[in-house]
Length: 110
Image (cartoon, rainbow, N blue to C red; front, top):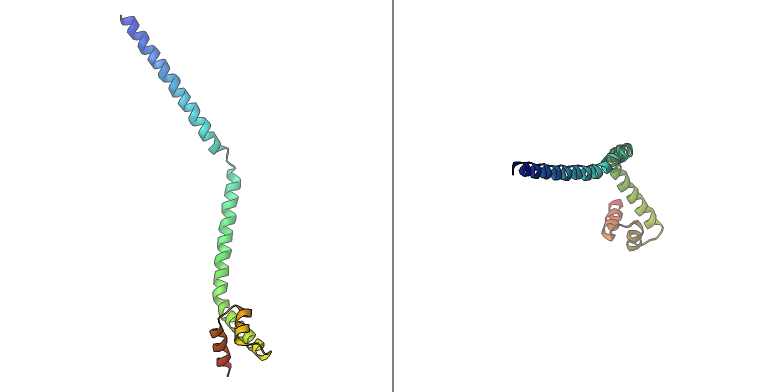
């Protein structure tokens, strides 16, 4: 009876060992894909993205300074178009601003 009990335990432990080995093999196959990722390419992509973010921040800073230039440019374009005989409605459509803005710009020149 004692030998049968020992053999049963050995068989159970053998089955458990086989199950553990199979689980380890499955985990290895799953994580093997992670190790095979192109890490250098991913790192380069992240660095390029960070450079683009820096450039965008610089452009945004430049935009803040150039907004007054844009407003002046729009004013000049409104005055030029008005001197060419365009109506405020036509100028607004052309410059993609509201008709009220055009009229305000024209009134500020007078």
